[in-house]
Structures are given as C-alpha cells and as structure tokens.
Image 1 (cartoon, helix red, strand yellow):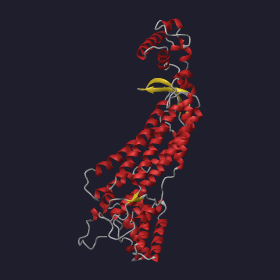
Image 2: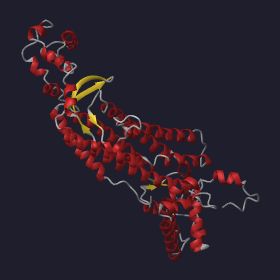
Image 3: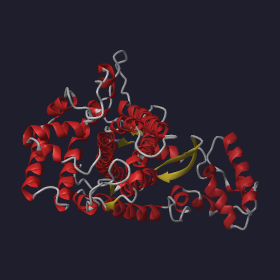
Length: 469
C-alpha cells in the first residue's frame, strides 16, 4: 500500500507481528458498509460515475455475502497478504472489479476508515448489550411480580437490618440495570458521529459532502474536527467502562444468589439447568453460573484498564498504538450472550418464601419500627433509639422477640409504651411504616412495579442503531 516510498521489504517477522487482520476481521461488515457509503460520497463529488458506483457497491455486497459465515471469517483472519480488514476488502474488491477497485480509496485514509468501523462496531455491540439488559430487567421484574407481598430480611454489613418485600429487593437490581442501559445509550449518542471525510489527519483533499456517508450509516452528523476524529478512541473506553458497571452489578447479584442458595440461608433454590455437581461429593449442587458472573467483571475491567493505558499520553493525531485498543473491545463480545443467560437463570430461580419470611420475623428486625412508634409518641429519636436498644437487650436475655415482651416489661423502659405497640411492630406495619417514595411499604412497591413496567417497556421499545454494523 506504500510501495512507492519504500525500496526495502518489511522484515518478515515484523510484518506478521504487526498485522491486525488476525483480530480486526470482526470489522468486515462495518468496513463494507463504510466503503459503500464512501462510494456514495465519491459519486456525489463526481469522482465515480453512477455505473461505477453501482458496480463497486454490488461487489462490496458480494464480499459480505461470501464471508458471512463463521467458517468463512476464518478465511479472512488467515489471509496471507492482507495487513488489516481495509486491505483485505480492497484486495477482494480488485479481484472482482479490477482497477476500479483501486479507485475507491480516493479521498480517504485508513485512519478515518478504522475510526468509522470501530464506531459502527461499538454502536452495534452496545445495542446488543442493551437488549440483554432489557431481558434481564424483564426477568427480575417478572420475579418481583410473582413474589407479591412475600418478605425477606434486608442486610447492612451482611447483618439482618429490616424486613423488606422480596419485590423491593429484586427491583433494586432493576434500577441498576436501567442505569447501565442509560450509560450505554449515552455512549452510543456520543460516538454517533461519522469520521469519514476526515482524511489521514487534516480532512479529505476532495470536496466531499460528508453528510452523505453520515446519513447512509445512521450517524447523527459528521465529526467536527478531523484530528480528533481520526485519533479519538474515547468511545471504546466509555463503552468498556459502561460494561464494567454491568459486570459489577451482575457480580453483586451473583454474590447474593450464591449466599442465598447456601443451606445456611436457604432463600433460593438454584435451577439445575444452570448448576453443576461435584465429581467427588454426590450431594453437591454448585452455583457455577453465578460464580462465573462474579469473575467476568475482572475480564471487562481489565479491558477498560488496557485501553486507558494505551491512550495515555498519545500525541495528536493517529498513532499505531491505537491498533491495540481494538482487541480489548473485541474481548468483551461475550457480554450480550452472558446477559441472555442471566435473564434465563433469573427466570428459573425458585424462591423459598417461607424461609425468607421466617428470617424476616426474627432477630429484632422490627426495632426501627419500634423506635418510630416511640417517635410518634413524642419521644426524641435518640432517646427512642436508646429505649428500644435496652428493650432488645432484655429480649435477647429472655430469648423472645420484641413483640413477645409483656406490656409491663416494655413500660419498664418507658411509660410511652401502650397496647398499640404490638400492632406497630407487626410485620405488615413494619413494612408499611416505610411509606415514602422508594420505600418498601406495600403500596409503594406496587407503584414501583408499575413504574418499572413502563420504564422497561420504554427500554425495549428503543431499538439500538444497527445501521451498517
């Protein structure tokens, strides 16, 4: 591609070592789409005739068809001559249309080609991840609906805190999922500008109408600065960072499911279709899917860290270092499939409602409600906190729950206690005293479920942009 300037051939080992076709073959469809869009811009600029444009676009389509299957993509990866995916498509184009294939590179540089291809690729992958998040949010929401008014303990410091509705616990993960989808949407919006027409660094040397390619590829508009466009890989880093949040939330969910499925908790029955046994211990059912989910965040975060360090300190504009940002982006292709799996896993979980309910009604989880009862009697909260703390210590020594103390025993801690105390610390009242937006009161959770239904529906209704990718 640069033989006019060079007289000495490349060192063979260096030539093999620096080739990117071994991983950027994944960009074949994006390269074909971007090349077709460039042909349209060249036609509008008068560089190509209508017949030449049609011939080139048809040949590009045929390349895509020929190498559509996974087996054929192996042929792309193992091509002996092509240095990268752009070179591969050019070689195949010349095989089909002869010298006309060489004409397509008029007015463009590989610097803008790779910047465009990667944006198309990341845009598609982010859309697939959003689809997977929507599936997981739906599965969580369905489980929350099925849970009805089932209760469970909530935890702080991994110690029992207060009773909550099971639905409230599940909806906490729905909130995380919706934030994750929002981050990916934001990333897609920011990357959705077309570098074609940026040239190698200073802009195309032809008077190209850059809006033509941008429209054809589904971009919002052309990029605003050629130097930034050809050297920008922020969108890869932002994408990987957004996926790191996805991984973190999956890991938190996986950790809780792993804990809750133990005999010590017994809150969750693991689905056999997503578990394995032990080669030595016949009784075992291991949470393999959950454990792998916990581990995958490390793979995703490592990819984000790699790109961070690859971009650090690079001068403007394009540098070969940027080639190394591609593989980390490709290494997280497992995320959409992983999300589909966790959605099915979540749907298949069986909750032991009785065990959860029993756990929520022992261990003085109504102590906060008891303190609130005293607040309503005019006791300052700090004083109420102390009085209930003393009552809890007394109940512990006696081996009973707060609601099992006699009225005389309660009044030894304060004259404010009355017969209405018992209703105030019953399970339903303990839940419903959290009657604020975002609280676990039964009416509030019903509202939250309805609200989540609309938000998830809006998420699934927003189709990710897949044009040309």
